[in-house]
Image (tube, rainbow, N blue to C red):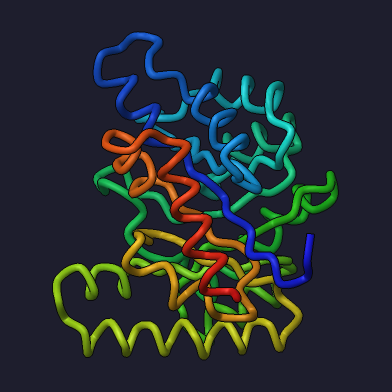
Length: 248
């Protein structure tokens, strides 16, 4: 795989959301994960929320058993989640902010304000071999704090850019995109690996994918939505093609 290859992590949370709407076993997130892997995903992302609104503990157990690509385990910085991560030792752990009342993750983690707590929280995860990623806004202060606490990776929250683009606020979208560009460069200069994600679509992915410092994009809700119309495999393959075009 070339040095320039941009990895695609496919988030399967919302396959579980559809399953849980009926309370049965279908659609199966593990089947979606394997299909994503076959379609060209470089990794699978799953967020085990405290309220278990989509991904379940059994899903995480199953993913650890069946995947041959890395699992990126998204989680809040709680004792319960730390214990689960330490038991499973996934390839990567991404620490995200979490509020019960939110529909989805609304913003980046406040690392600078919780620096000491987060440094102690991630140390055992690093000790067992998990790559620790911190999900943050494109903000220099937060990136510097993530670097100080020992994170190896940051994932830049692309939601503000995607929302502005979707609402036709193109000047705002360009402003957010420029912030993402500058902070990708800054984080890379500190030796952090840079990922990005949240809200990315076919219409918004290419400008972010073109940033040379970004090594991975994590995309979920849009791909699961598109799969209703196209099928999961074509939806992922179309995203992969756009990413490759941007990188070329």
